[in-house]
Length: 438
Image 1: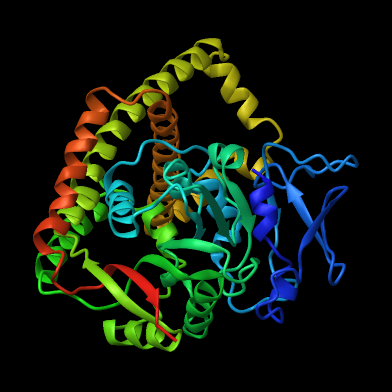
Image 2: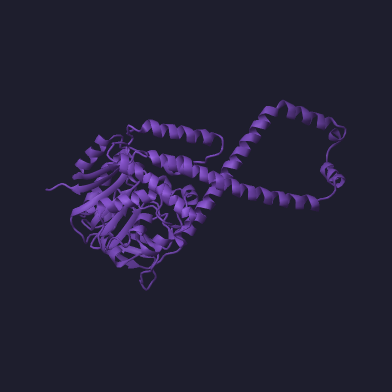
C-alpha cells in the first residue's frame, strides 16, 4: 500500500548514502509508472504485486490502494539473498497471512512485550518477508512500514501495509524517521561484511529516543543442546524413511549464513554501531524443536497419507477406465511389432534385449528407485504446499475450530521455552537496542 506516510519517509537509496542529516535529499515524486528522485532524477518502479505485472501509478499521479515501491539500490551493496530466486517464490507460501500461531506467535508476542508499540509510533520492519508482522501489528502502531529485498509480499500486506523493496544495508529512508524499528529472522541472512552496515542503518533511520527489536541467532549452543540434538536425530531417522519431509525448512534455511558466531561478536557489532542492549531473552528451543520437528511433521505425514490415498484411488479409477477402453491384447501386440526388422522377428533381438537387461539389472534398478524417490519427494512437497496454502486461507477466514485449538496448545508449549529457559544463553535471541547517549 503506497500511502502519504510512506512517501513522507521514503527516499532514493543512492541519495541517502550522502544525505547526512538532510531529510529532503532524495525525496520521491510520483510520475507515470512509478516515482522519480527530485534530487538525482533516478527513476523507481511501483507495482501492484510481487510479480511486478503492472505499474500502479497512472498519468494522473493518483496513488493506488494496493502496491509497493521498488527502491533497491542502483548498485549492489553486497551479497544478495537467494529469496530473489524463482524457487523461493514458488515453494514458500507467501500469498496470504493467517493467524499468528506456533513460532510466529511466540515471536510476535515478544515483539509486543519488549518493544511496547504505541499509537504515537511510526514503525519500520527491516526484512519483513511477506509482511505478516507488520500486518499483525498494524493497529498497534500509528503507522508501520515494511522493507525487504525480495518482494514476496502477501496480498493482505499489499492492501494495508506501506511496503518497499529495498536493502537493509542501505535503507531507502530519511534519517531519524522512525520511533520503533524491528527485524526478525534477517541478520542470519547477511554476510559478515553486511552486519556492521545493517546496524549502522538501523541507527541512522531511528529517532534519538527510539528503540529497536531484533530476533536472530548466533551459532552458540546452549546447555540444553543435547536434548535438541536428540530431537534432531529422531527427526532425521523418520526423514530417511520418507515419513518426515523437511524440504521447505531446508529451502528456507539455505540462505542462512549466520556470520555472527557468538554473543560476544554480536555485542561488538551492536556497540560499534552506537547501541547498548537494553533487554535480552534467549530461545533455547526445547519445546519448539519437539513441536516443529516431531509433532508438526507427524501431523503433516498423516495429512499427506490421506491425500495420497485419495490420489492413488483416483489414479486406479482412471487406469481402470483406460484399460477398459483399450484394444484387446492381440491388437495391441500386433501394433507393438509393427515396423520391427527381421532380426527382431526371429527372436535374436529379444535375446539381446534380455541379455542387456540382465547385465544392467542393478543399474536399472538403482535408477528406478532413484526416480521413484525423486517423484515421491516432489509429490510430497507439492501436497504439503497445497495443504499449507489451504490451511492459511482457511485460518484467515475462520479463527476457531479443533485444528486452531490444537495449534494454540502447541503454541503454549513453545512459550514454555521462554518462560523456563529465557535467561539461559544460547544461539537464538530477542534483544532491545537503544542508542548510546552522546
